[in-house]
Image (cartoon, rainbow, N blue to C red):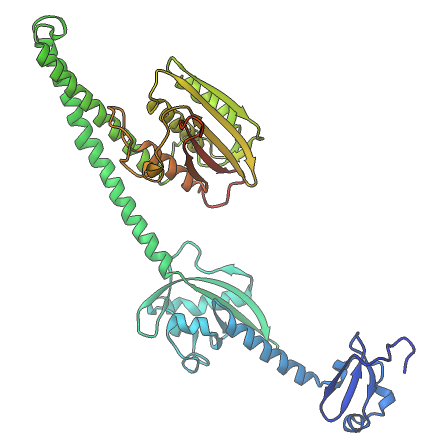
Length: 429
């Protein structure tokens, strides 16, 4: 026994005899029965790795068995194919996707899983892959389908890789069933197409008549006796009421278009939807420069967060709508709006606080729904907060309302927005 080996047996295995090994997997003692079976003197085996007692073929067989178990347990469909295009292995998930039993796939050409229109080109593509094997997605930019056993086609995504099996290179195709995602994408395309049609109809069939009605009102006023129709006060009052309704309809249409456009994130050709450093303070100051607060209102700004990467226009639209909402729904001649911004983990938490009448608890969810508003003023479309919620959600954030903001007075509301400080890939493409 070599002196550097731990003489204390760590484990034992039973086969044709016994063997003891140390914690490094080296033999420290061999039973005489096992030594005779192996054709060695017991002392000749001491110090050797335990693997030396196992024939290489046995190791290969054990490894292949382990690989088969791992391969079959994968949650993704996988199929192992040789250079001739013959299926060597097909795991359980793959068989569930295409509706075949294992015996119906192993030994058959891979073309059994391909729609007939793609089979002619398959052998050429397979040969090209084996000449230059590399990990890649298959059919990038194309809609791929697999042929089910019942003859239907299953939308799939396929990734290709390669590995040696039995000393020979094989291709491995990893197959994901994307039927559910394809249905959702189809529904989304249909919904977007319907929305686009609505926008076109609204623009042509609603805006034009509104402009025509507004022109008619102006002409009627010009025809009235006296300046501004002073001689006909009842008529003038009714004309004013019609004008208010036209203005409200125009506001509603503008808000609907803004809400519809927010779904796709397409803001303008001049500003691609690419995140860039954004300073919340600059955003608020820019809003006030273009749309100052009415007399009697003041805004307090408290920003303590470093600039972060975001798409500026949606964030600016959210803040602008929340400020406008605080002004529109205030029940007094003036008030104070306070905006604070703080880092909150991976988010920037932005609070827009007002000292208005607040939001009843029963309406906290309702105010974010389309066409819902707490009052019925001429400039109320019931879309502003729905637009805010959609924009926040589209860009990976969330929003809530806290009211009353001041429990001691029972007044005010805080609209709290969590906007991601670290944009995720895919949300802005």
